[in-house]
Amino acid sequence: MEIVNVTNLKKLYGEFPAVNEVSFSIKQGEVFGFLGPNGAGKTSTINMMTGLSRPAGGQITIDRIDAIKDVKKVQKIIGVIPDENNLYDEMDGFDNLCFCASLYGMRKKEREKQALELLEQFNLTKTGKRPFKAYSKGMKRKLTIAAGIIHNPKILFLDEPTTGIDIESARQIRELVLDLKKQGKTIFITTHYIEEAERICDRIAFIVNGRIVKIGTVTELMESVDHEHKIKLQLDNGIEGIKKELEDNFSNCRIEIPDENSCLIISKERIALSPILQLLDNKGISVYEAKEIKPSLEDVFVKVTGIKASKLIKEKEKVGK
Amino acid sequence: MHASIAFWNILKKDIKNYYLKPPNISWGIIFPLSWTLMQLVRSQGSIGILGLLPGLMAMSVLFGTTSMLAVTITFERRGRSFDRLLLAPVSISTLVFAKILGAILFGIFNAFVPVVFASFFTDLSGVDWGIAVIAAVLIAITSALLGLLIAISAREVFEAQTFSNFFRFPMLFLCGLYIPINNLPQLLKPISFCLPLTYGTDILNATIAGNSIFDIIFNIIVMLAFAALLFYLCQRNIKKKWIL
Ligand SMILES: Nc1ncnc2c1ncn2[C@@H]1O[C@H](COP(=O)(O)OP(=O)(O)OP(=O)(O)O)[C@@H](O)[C@H]1O
Ligand SMILES: [Mg+2]
Image 1 (cartoon, rainbow over the protein chains, first blue to last red):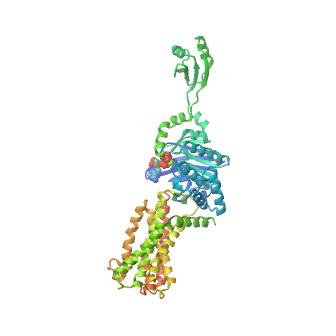
Image 2: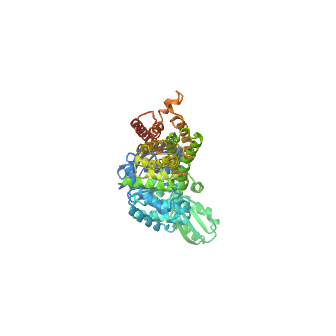
């Protein structure tokens, strides 16, 4: 069942369309990811869905509520973890969490119980009495996430939860997202880490220049681009001499030799291995291993968007500082 | 129920985080105190403490509330923590009420600093304090809303402070605090009557100094009308400027 429906969503800043006719839906209990470079419109989309910004056009339905007209109703059932930590610098972790819970009408006893539990769960109990501004970046991020889930929301919005923090904290956060999914929460997450999207999202949308260019499960995305079949052979040396012969015999294949002990066979069609192996065998070359090389999500992203994945990440790290 | 929990906690947080911070408390005491002293020294008793008190009270409220709102709102907006309030299932009007109530209470506290001070020097028993409190409350409400209106438009704390000074200083001279409105140039008089502070000061003048232009009830009604108008403008601008 679909719990979130977005159709033709549009956001203009002046004349500039930051989000342009974006449509997608999220199924109940799924982790849905927005993957895109800086300025793609990820945050703008989240802001419109959570009531921080007004769309120029389109519809948003969340749990059958019109999220543009009845923002306050929707806000009761959603939790938002923004791209920038937005807790109160002067207040300690515990007070921050309790305050956030109070905004959702939670009573004192309940707030305090939840806050303590979350501090424990996020390994922040020891620092619970330190002011937020004295937290490290990773700790700040974790507390911000805790603050976003303290009222037990049905749907979660996470805007780049792992940008700019250390590897270990990022790993913990990814695990937490999967935990929340196990608890049955629906999760909308934005990221610029392809790997992260691949690892935790059930479905991914590539967003570039305010438009969704592709949407699907990881497998669907992989299959969507027609890619070349690649087989890597591991052999003893001597391949150099027969490259031409291989190409002459198998004219639909391209041969690449990355190093003297291996050979890549590339073809638009599926590759029948036995004739190749036979030819090599006849030449006295032994094959120890044959491995199909599958395209990665990164390859798909590059192909679909025309954006180099490495460039995307580098830009982002600078911003993350 | 739900909304009232949020309301009290926003108010409590502001009081704890901002109003009860030592620099703000001392500002709330020292500022009215120094104005009081300055006026006393300057006038050398020619007007008398009772004549000065309404002006000092009104001014303390005006400065106290407007400067605090510039901080509690603009500062939180800059640090993005304000988004948290906008993301909460709390209506904008509850939010605005909670935010300004802190400033109003702070303003009322400010108003009575000069009174306590004056009580050492003069007999205040003839004053109807019930009415004085009503006046202080009304001035605090309108000033807080005015401060909010300014804070909504400002992006930086210093911007908010500068904007408020544009309003605050001219207001001091046009509201009959130091120059009776009847002595103002004809051209400026209409402006005076457009300022809520004029009516608040008039109530204080009536009860403390015993001279006023309008009837107290009339003043109260005008002040309430100003408050309603400002509240409406604030809400409208918030929706326009905060939810982009
Ligand atoms: N308040 C604003 N005024 C004008 N332009 C804006 C505003 N907010 C965002 N933009 C522009 O809209 C576009 C989309 O921005 P958005 O923040 O949604 O991107 P994003 O995908 O979240 O990027 P990032 O990965 O950097 O967070 C960008 O070109 C940005 O410059
Ligand atoms: Mg963003």
